[in-house]
Image 1: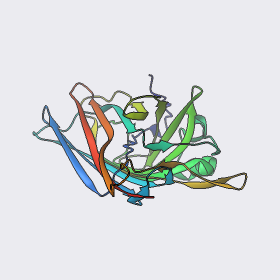
Image 2: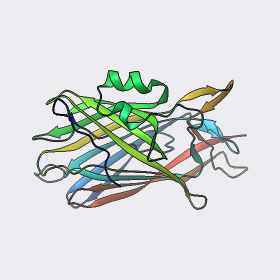
Image 3: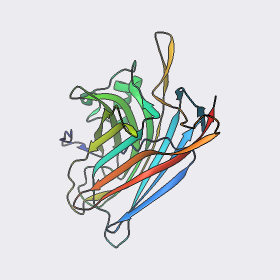
Length: 263
């Protein structure tokens, strides 16, 4: 997949937004180490109590922190893939669709003016920038319900002014599987970064939206609790996260969570 990156001399296209979507019951952390790198994931779900046999609206807050275990800075992130347990659902039906050319390149205000109705999440982006990196040192993340090459996507837009004005929109393509543990996969490729120019250090994102379509209430994210009848709750693998680093390793982890069932 090619990165959809457009450059302008006034504001270099910039930044990265990472969507780690899952059904975390409490703020828990998973830490993965490999090849001199450490990634710490956290996730939180609200509400924690969910119906046993039907879908209910949820909101998810997730974060990732990348740390080098040596003296060198972490290599740039190259790929993100998140597979979501089939008990969680992402359904954009009825939401306006945001298109890449509406928000890239753009400031935060311009992106919101163009696609506010498509907004499904907000967050924060942090990076170490020591050269001509294609992302800012920090910025607000806005995630829009979008479409790319005719396929459903989440368009994650970041804009920052340090060390200079920069904007970048990263597309997470959404695919679905009919069978197996995981029902939805989000996958994004990041553009190449020159060695030593900069590296992502932390990302936080909160996702969730309720809206009305023809007078009927809908939710962008829903979930049920897969607890067998007679049990008050369940523990399960809610997502599998994989981060690939440019010229470095790929770190993969299973994110385990629990939920309380009602009904």
